[in-house]
Length: 236
Ligand SMILES: [Zn+2]
Image (cartoon, rainbow, N blue to C red; front, side, top):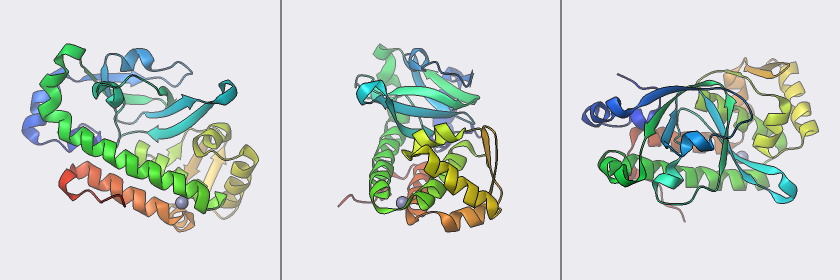
């Protein structure tokens, strides 16, 4: 039975069956609270919730790193033995699977989750590299189209409950630029924006607007869903 998170669904049926009794379905409400308390309990696999990770920036302003949904997992850094350095907050309410993992018992899940999570971390590294080069190489309209498609893929929904301010933080673009690009996309019937919400009306059209980074990162994440770590592309 599909669990609705690509990493979990990439597991063989036997592994999924072994893991299923330990998984707890939880609902994540959109609010400003950090998910620190939840992530201290174990690994979080979003299903239709969208979570944004961020780092504290200079002058107390957080820098948003990534919007994570059904293709992602949170708490992996701690699971790998690192100290928690990123903050995580819910961008869109929805469900997620929590796998409580008391630290001494972590090794009992290594066999099941070690390879899929290592594969996912590698994919995130690749996606982050694309994002860095995207911010330097591509103009704002193409980057914004890329970002909207990424978020839609993470939530599995064409309707995004995002304010322009949140989108500006997620994309590291100035808010007036976000507003201008959205207005243009709306004028051409590609998206529809109402207060606090952005709907993708013409997905094909939006894909044509996006920079090539979108197709590249989508391919990386699609491979991640298959959990084929042996076929990982090489970083050169
Ligand atoms: Zn790009």
